[in-house]
Amino acid sequence: MKNRCKWVTKEPLYIKYHDQEWGVPVHDDRKLFEMLCLEGAQAGLSWWTILQKRENYRRVFDQFDAEKIINYSDEKLRTLMEDPSIVRNKLKIQSVVTNAKAFLKIQQEYGTFSSYIWSFVDHKPILNQWETFQNVPATTERSDAMSKRLKKDGFKFVGSTICYSFMQAVGMVNDHTLDCMCHPLNLNMKN
Image (cartoon, rainbow, N blue to C red; front, side, top):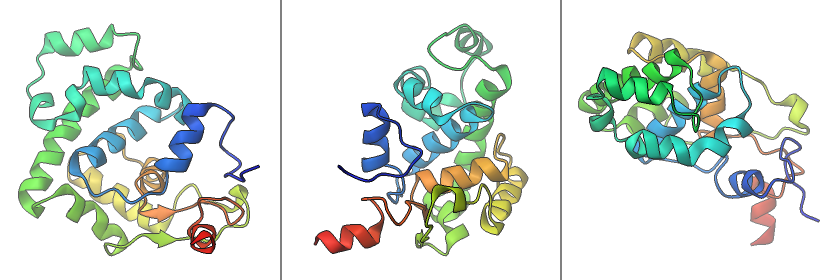
C-alpha cells in the first residue's frame, strides 16, 4: 500500500494528479498560466471539480494560449458562459481574459512569466516537512506577497489562498506530508 497525502481520494485521476503533478516544479509559461487560471476557477469550489473539467478548460480556452485569449469576442465569451463543460461563472470566465492580458505584459517586462512568478520563492522550491495535512497552511507571507503583487499587476481571482494553492500545484512549495511517498525525503530513500 502506497502512502499518499490524506487529501487524495481513490479516484484514478486524483491519484495521477497527486503522484505526477502536484508539487513538481513547473517553469513552462503556458502551464503556469493555465494553473493560475484553474486555481482561480476553483475559488469556492473543490479542486476535484476543476480537475475533472480541466481537459474541457484546455479545449475551450485554446490550450491557454494567452495571445488567442486576449482577442476573444463578446460572442466567444457568451458561448463560454453557456458551456456546461466548465464552471459557468461570468467573473471567472472574464478573469481568464483579464489574466491573459496581464500575463503577456509580465512576459514582455520580465522575459518569461516563470522568472516573475518564481521570484516569490527566490527561484527555488520550498521543501516543507509537515507531519499531517492539518499542519499545512492555507496562506503564507509569500502567498500574501504574491497575491498583492498579482493584483497590482492586473490579475483577478488571485487571493492569497488561491496563490498558495497555485504555489503547491506548480511546485514552488512542496507540501507533500512526511508520510507521503511523494515527499522528496521518501523519494531520496528509494534511490
